[in-house]
Length: 105
Image (cartoon, rainbow, N blue to C red; front, side, top):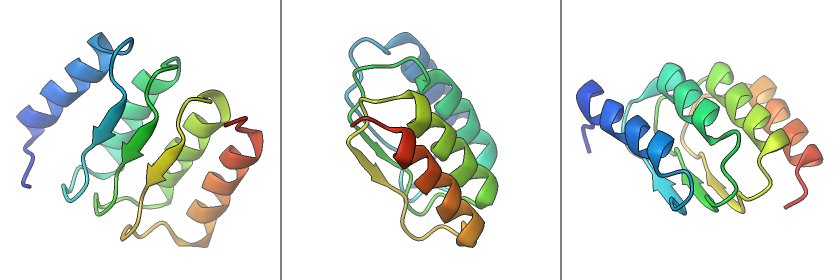
């Protein structure tokens, strides 16, 4: 997909301004990395509409997985999370599992 930094800035603007209507966000197959996932998850902390988030093949590490785990602790609207083909390791898996344990979805 080759989403550029400029394109990701536009995605972040949409996430920030469309929090009441955005139901699905798919940024998969883009090397956006942990930093951009951190920005996106920060903006989704109080979103109660988004139900699907796909960050598969985004170049995530344990840091990105930790951000997703923290998001899952506070955001109970996400029902589907795609994050395959990332290098999150055991520690990243644990972070996501901890988030799921707190999640009421």
